Image (cartoon, rainbow, N blue to C red; front, side, top):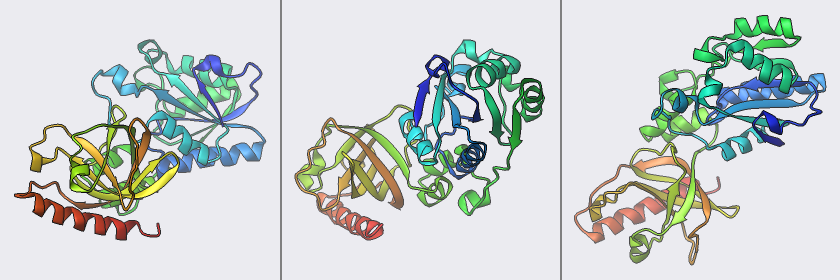
Amino acid sequence: MQRWRGLEEIPGDWGRSVVTIGSFDGVHRGHQLIIGRAVERARELGLPSVVVTFDPHPREVIRPGSHPPLLAPHPRRAELIAELGVDAVLVLPFTTEFSQESPEDFVRQVLVDALRARLVIEGPNFRFGHRAAGNVALLGELGRADDFEVEVIDLQVCGTAGDGQPFSSSLTRRLVETGDMAGANEVLGRPHRVEGVVVRGAQRGRELGYPTANVETVPHSAIPADGVYAGWLTADGERMPAAISVGTNPTFDGTSRTVEAYAIDRVGLDLYGMHVAVDFLAYLRGMEKFDSIDALLDRMADDVKRARELTDGR
C-alpha cells in the first residue's frame, strides 16, 4: 500500500481512482464497511482505491485543546486500512488555512486535480469544507459537474455495545474511558490497542516478582479506565499474554498515571527503549489500595491467573 503525506507526494502520473474520506479513527466496524465498499468498487472498475484522512484531528485545529483521545495513531491506522486491501492512504495535514477552504475548493483540489476521482464512497453524514458546509447532496452535485460519481452507503452498524447504540469512534472512546473493553472490542472488531515506548519506572514490579513494561503512551492515546486487565503485550513482533495495570499505584501512594504490562511467564525480558503495543482484552477489576504487600501479592497472583485463562489459546 502506498502512503502519502500531503498532495505533493501523489505521483504525477496518478490515474483515476475510487476514494473515501474521513478521520477513520479506530477503523471500527462501521469504517470497515465503507472502506471495504471502496475497495470492492475499485476492483470492479479496475481502479486503485484511496483512503483520505487528516492529521492532526480537525477539532484540534478548529478548537485547540479539544483533541479527542486517539483510538489508533496514524501509523496503526494505516496498518489497519492496509489490511482491508486499500491501495493508497493520503494523509492531509489539517491546518487553519486548509480548514477555511470552501467545499468546492476542497473537491477541486483533492478529488479532481490530485486524485482524479472516478467514484467517491461516503456515509450519509459526511461533511467537508469550511465550517463543514458541504454534505453528500452537494458532493453529488459537484461530482456531476466534475465527472465523478458519489455512492452513499449506510454505516449504521449496531450490537450490544452501548446498549445498542450505532457503532462510532465517539462511542468507542466512551466505552474505553469506562473500562468496558467487551463493548469497545465489539465496536472495533478486535481488542483496543495502546502503543508507546517502554521507559524505566519505579521498578516495584520487578522487586515483587512481576516485572512490568512501563509504557510511555503516544500523545492523546485513548487509555482505558484505571484498573487491571487481561490482554497482550507485543514487542518486536512477538505477542505475549499479559496482565495489564492502568492507574497510579495507590498502594505505594503514586501520583502519576501509568500503563504497565506484565508478560505472563516470561523471564529476562529487556524491553527498555522499545516501541510496544498493549492490547486490552478484558477488564478484571478496579484499582485498589492494599493494606499490605502480602495482600497485594495475593491479588496480583489471582490477576495473573485470570489473565492467563482468558488469553489462553486466543
